[in-house]
Image 1 (cartoon, rainbow, N blue to C red):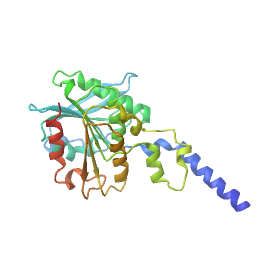
Image 2 (cartoon, rainbow, N blue to C red):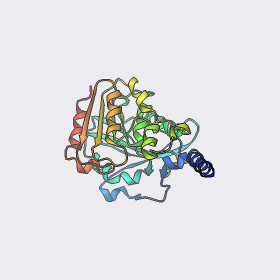
Image 3 (cartoon, rainbow, N blue to C red):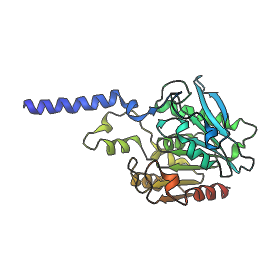
Length: 268
């Protein structure tokens, strides 16, 4: 009986710790000056942008313009680092006929505040509104792009703002699905307050959708990406990134940028 009570105490204590430190288990921001804040070293000319949420949280991002742009990519990044950790990927994306706006959520990089689920959704809405207000951006040609946790942010945004298309890479259907993979021996679903419930929201998105996922993804299992794709309505397409893990997708799969270009160029 003592052993049983001890194990129950450990079990409940683990669940309590997960609940108390949930946001620290989800968000891993790097604050300025951490990072590589010299985009010119990657051959990039970026415009430093600051904008605010409806509640007055000051956010930061980079705009990369292209005179031949057929669309503007609004990039919602993953849960770790900041925008500077995407510089190599940004430089390669900038070769496509698109403008790119990459921003940091609250608590990341030069953005104020602390991240949480509701907050990052509001940050993406503020980023969209800022982008759509620019005279050099056609709001009807904004493509929302979300990678990893940013996929959940992108899906939420796509249900709230008009857009030309949605690109989701290496993402999942819900936080509970991910928690079940990370803590298979604990009923974490009982105590989690974060949802990131893309699998329910995506059913309401009627615009063209492109899904990409590495079949060797060690963080977000390939089948979670497939499940989200299956829940989405048409029009949609799925590109399997063969041999790609979670963080090497864009340079492992030889067709990666061709697939993105084709998606953008065939949008209505």
